[in-house]
Length: 391
Image 1 (cartoon, rainbow, N blue to C red):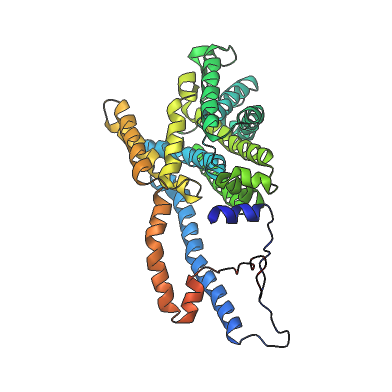
Image 2 (cartoon, helix red, strand yellow; image 1 turned 60 degrees about the horizontal axis):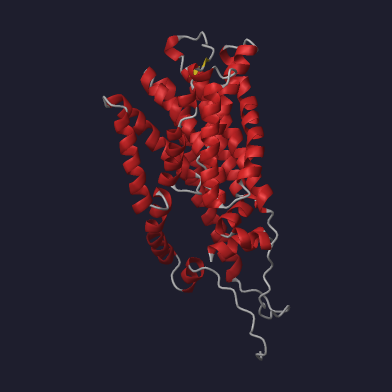
């Protein structure tokens, strides 16, 4: 039912069901305006705690590096914000369209290498390097156009294989090209900042990028473009038959996702100070991003954010605590299997399913009798009479 609803709305489907006759001279029941006003007031009351919580959350993130000044803590925070942006960008394409990409490291590494090479050629350092981030994202988005024109001609399972092939092509190219420094890589410029607050500029730029990625996801999801993406995810053939131009829609989402990912790659390489092929084009990068999105809830707004905020600090902590760095990767592989087997929809959608009966119970208690039924139950549209039947 959800598939038909999304696909129909994306194509501008009109409801042809027969509406009941209404007497123009008959006045509407007096209770209807009261119910409408009460619903609006209830919606405003429900949004107020959400807005207040969002304001508190932004304040907490803004004050975080001022309260926790330990360099190790702020380093983990910077990397976590970068993964929040990347996971949201990946979900913007893969979560909304249903085309799972295992090649976003190509855009991540492209943005990283562009920033290092551009900063070196233009002799930029300090905060001036941050102005290269939009250019790094633009280069990654430009690369996404030919890759998307090739990869998006196939369907989802084959698309995954093609993205993996693109990844290994990019990794091998970076290891052998002179402009990328070969297997030795390139050194990024080192800003001359105070050691006590060295991580703070990276933190606030990462926070701005993460907020921008989440805001872009919200705008797209609420737009007609996002509705078309979800229609493609539900049933691409039906969406195309109803007028959705699948190829341009998918390509546009991929380009936007690559733009954010390229900016994140540029910020990351400037933060760590070196671009090496085996780390810039890391196969574990894509697996980590996919796990974050699946863990929180694929196709949701808050799911990838929650997954990045939980999993990335956990991975960094395990890496610091374990003598063997591969132990954390083994644990994350096991966690991925657990999520796929027992939480296939993610934490947030599963929790929402558990909380829905309790919410409906409170709603029926607040609106006893018929009013509760009218609010709790979805609107049922009358079906048109069958051919040859009499009214």
